Length: 185
Image (tube, rainbow, N blue to C red):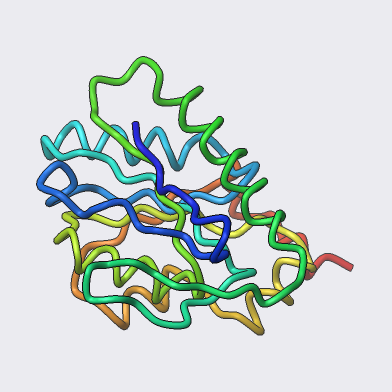
């Protein structure tokens, strides 16, 4: 497992070199406190494909200002609280260590910045990813409102790149006769 180093003085995150070890990888897009089903499904498909696993978290509190030709990514915070994204990365890293401990798949954790769909698409192009794995959103009214304004990452990826996308349900499925929680009266 590897991670991206942070250039504290400049406030920029330096991308780990994209090397042959990640070529053709399965990308698992993970958020803090997400169901382990997403990581486990991604690891299972990586093993089936004989590919490494790139566990990525996208820090939406930062955005890319520019990228040097050598791959150095300069980013700036959207909010003054830049520690939030680092804390979320720690949670994702800990989940990966816990749920991937007994897998034979080689994996590494990466921090991306900016719009989730565009950041994942960019990494997928750089490493020629074989599959992108994302989770469904959590149920609830608040999540429905968030998705209304920001859109579905899976849907946006499906319209902006050519790689297959596996969408993993985070919760147990609803029964055919059950209403979605956000529309229950």
